[in-house]
Amino acid sequence: MKFAVLPLLWMLALPAVAALAPQWQQELQQLTEQAARAALPPHAELQVQLGAPDPRLRLAPCEQVQAFVPAGQSLWGRSRIGLRCVAGAVRWSISVPVQVRVFAPAWAATQALPAGVTLEAAHLERRRVELSAEASPALAQAEAPLGRVLARPLEAGEGLRQSHLRQRLWFAAGAPVQLRLAGSGFAVKAEGQAMAPGLDGQPVRVRLDNGRTVLGQAVGPNEVELAW
Image 1 (cartoon, rainbow, N blue to C red):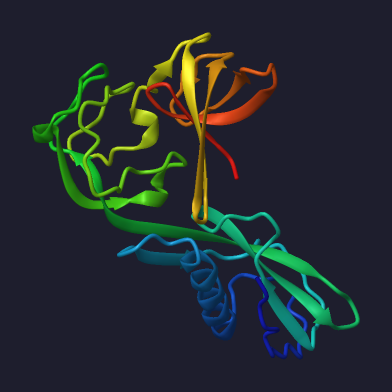
Image 2: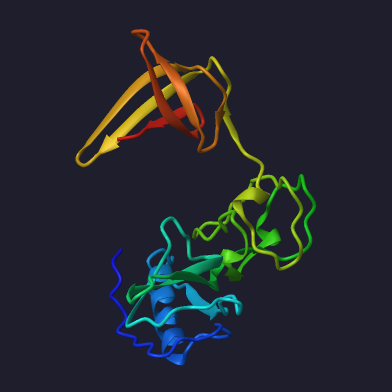
């Protein structure tokens, strides 16, 4: 992703940086929202709160300042965004704390639920959930994950996340499995033998009848999907 250079002129050296200039705040806010929205699900809402740089920083005068997203930085939850001098006697680069909160409809508990409970319709409701509150993805699909077993407890009103659910075992090591490979306008199926237990969504090796092994993903009862 490319970001335009911000035409900001800073003619006087600041002995310390206690807060961002108003124009910097606006540009950083827009840049953060632009980068965060690229990964937003449908019907999601975004809230961005910029922090202040370290007040002990001393920066040299700069004729042109550029805002940027640090490489590999995810702008969900607590993160950082950068400013750097690209035209000045002394080049410098700083980072500014930012908190990005993402809200969207997802499944949440209607009541406190202990670990080990098998989810039923009465246990769940659709409501506004902060997706960015935890690293584990919130469950926002249209159909409720009924029949799944909780691996850890849920508080009333708490959003249901992938880490709350006990991982499903689709097949045991040594079990016969169906392999499928689908692409644009074609589908291929084959049979093989699982070389390890098939945990939901996890990679598993399968031995084919000719002795070759392939790596796929366990996706259902005795079903393995191959990557295309």
